[in-house]
Amino acid sequence: MIFVYGCAKMAKQMSSGEVLYRSKCSSCHNVIAPSSYGREDWGRYIDKYGQKMTDEEKRAVLGYLVGVE
Image (tube, rainbow, N blue to C red; front, side, top):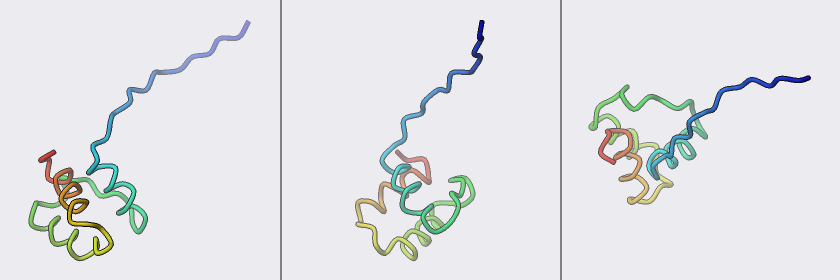
């Protein structure tokens, strides 16, 4: 007889901003916790490094990072 034990993982639905952040930003560096910086700093980083992102994508990522979504 074989017993299989495991734990059920709870799936967390990601917002569009989080999906964009994880897909676009983590292509160049590790994911940084949103609480690491404030709104101004995140805004500067997104403007500086998100040059290939649309304005809508930038707003979504910033919203996720500062907890507005």
